[in-house]
Image (cartoon, rainbow, N blue to C red; front, side, top):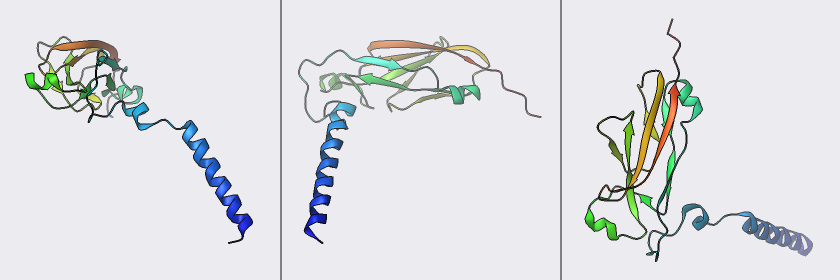
Length: 150
């Protein structure tokens, strides 16, 4: 390969690396601190819950995305897990003031099907490994009437 072409390719590669590094976010920026290193003075956990996704809701299916800050959603329970750092926990989900709730430790989208058309609300509670509620949010939405099948 001619030296001039090698120089052009090397310059182009260096430019791409510098520009790519300057605009890219780090894994820590996106995922947060490593779960392998204890965190001193952790900030308070926070729950963020989005309204249902509009496309599935138009079909009568409720898809609610959520995330937590300063707490990892994992299926670990019990008093001993309170000492883990970074913090861990799960969510409690209550639909329309039901006298019961279900527990989810997947961190994945909440999916509800079979709700009758009309107004509904879902209470999402962020809980520690002993089920103590740390934060909560209620999402209100309307399940639309579905056209009858012909």
